[in-house]
Each structure stands twice: as C-alpha cells, then as structure tokens.
Length: 256
Image 1 (cartoon, rainbow, N blue to C red):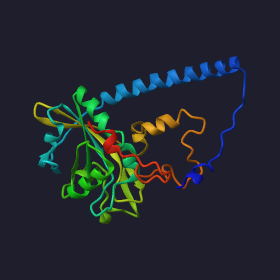
Image 2: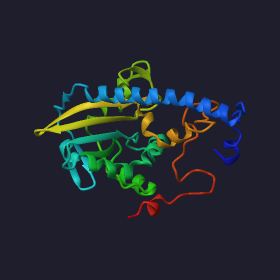
Image 3: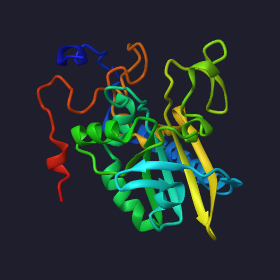
Image 4: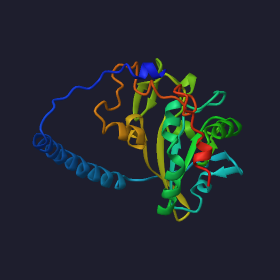
C-alpha cells in the first residue's frame, strides 16, 4: 500500500458545536465508557474464575538454548502466556498481522515478568526459520519452535491439510473456514506443585485487546479506517516494509 493509497480513505464528517455542547456530549460518552470499564473488569474476574484443565501431554520445543519442555518455558515463574504466532515450516516470513501484534512484545514481556508471568511466542516453523525472521525484525522476546510436536494442533492453531472437512477447521471453539494452515491465538498456563494447567485460550477477535495500535486508532475520528479494505488488517505490513520511506531500525531503538 502506498502513501497515496492511504490518503484516499474517507474523511470523517461530524457536527461542529460550541464548547458547552461538546462537553455535554463528552460527558454522555464518558458515562458509557465507565460502564464499559466496569463490564470489562467483571469479564476479567470471570475469566480468572474459569476452571483449569491439567496438561497431560509432554511437549518438547526447540529453543535458543536447546530442547525445552513446557515447564521450562515458565522460566521460574508460575504463569505462562503463549502467543501462537502464525509462522509455518517453509514460510519465508511470519504473518504480518502477528508481527503487527508482536512489535509490542519486548517491553510487555519485561513488565509481565515482574508479575510472576512469562511471555513466550511459539510457532510451528523450524527454529532456524524463527531465528532468521526474529533477527530481521529486531525482536528480543523468547520464541520457540513446536515443529514435530502436536502442540499447535492440540491448541487449535494449526490445521492439517488432511484434517479439513469441506475447507473447515476447528478454530475458536467451532468449525469455521480459514484460508491458512496456521492460525493466531493465545493460551495461558499455570504451574502449581510441579503440575501444569491450561487456564485460558483466545482466538480471532479475542486477541483484539492485544493490539495497542488499534487501541490508539479507536480514539481517533477515522478509527481503524478499514471499511473499504478487502478485509481488516489488509493494510498491515511488516514494520520494515511500509512504503513511506521511514524504515525503523527496531533493534537500535530497543537496544539496552
């Protein structure tokens, strides 16, 4: 997408009012925003009260330092968040939309570590493929390979070609059509007394809250501005491939 293409989106129109009228409208919206905040707090509480399921299988991943079990990924903490990054074996690069989300991982992982939580990305691509792409993008978060394991299939983020029924796969807790063998998702695990439990997984729009760029855009008059696109996120590129000539060296920006 070129700069000129981005500038052809529809210009928002709105009623222009006095300061007093604007303030009244803002207070009316604020009441709804506070209601939404309370509802979100209640939803988060119910999420924490979800029952757990014990992880019975033994998964072994390829990591930067060698073979690692699921228990090892906790890195001494009790909580583990796994982002299921869409990156299959043989792919030239990871999914642009997952990359869009992953651009915020490095410092998020640093802060989460202070709250007994480890963040790890897992993909079915091989470790050399992951390491090469990770270096290109300038990321530092931990990213391991589940290649050769059933992990991705067990957590509904990979669809085997021969398991599709009429091009439908089981994803987000129902049969649905999806144009890829790799799917995005997030899973949460808890370790207690040496045992590991699966506490939560989310897919599709359930990942929306993880996208800070969207959260910022939602505050603007044009919002996400995607109505005229063939699908949401059609505009998203890897951060080193936007055509505005302002390629950012993330490795330098995040260097410690």
